[in-house]
Image (cartoon, rainbow, N blue to C red; front, side, top):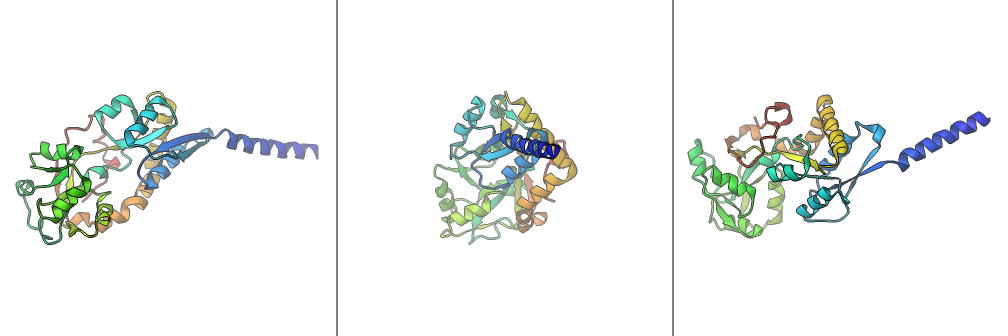
Length: 279
């Protein structure tokens, strides 16, 4: 009887200790898509002995403010964001593109009165003759200009869509991940998603941790690689974005590739298994 009681107490203490000493990992991101939180939790599940528990940061912060807290090791443990040289100098990037390059996939929003704008576009020069509009501070603006595309610039987000509505420009390229949501913001405008082209440039979107948080960085990286190897990463990715990719009928689109001179050389471009494919 005494042995049985001791065993029960041991089990209860072990369970309580495991719960008590869970390592909370505070994750901050403006994106509401639960994919990011699910993926981070899944990656950390491959080190069960450390009992990581992912929690979303409770306050809405400007992204740079959140990154500052990350660097200070104060309140925030993990962020996500696009790969840039300056970020990689300041924070520890986990060199695994969690969006498989989708941030660099752009679809064109066009005026509904010109639905065949890109239908007969065959050459790169014909594509470059069309004038896009972009926000004046976006990196995408610089990328288009670097590729010798004349870009109309705006300083007001809604104004970009209004310019297209009024036919002052030809199209508004927006991220594959944002384009449907953007159209729902301004249903009163005469806009649609072009069905004929896909614009692509290299882009990586990473998890970031503090430079001093080497253990967490290693555990996230190891978990992501294991998830890739056992197929669970692709499963989570397809659950989040597969239907969206299918709805845009990417295989039928003409692809125009742009050079991106602003990405670091650290991006694992040669690991084909990490990147999504349009065709």
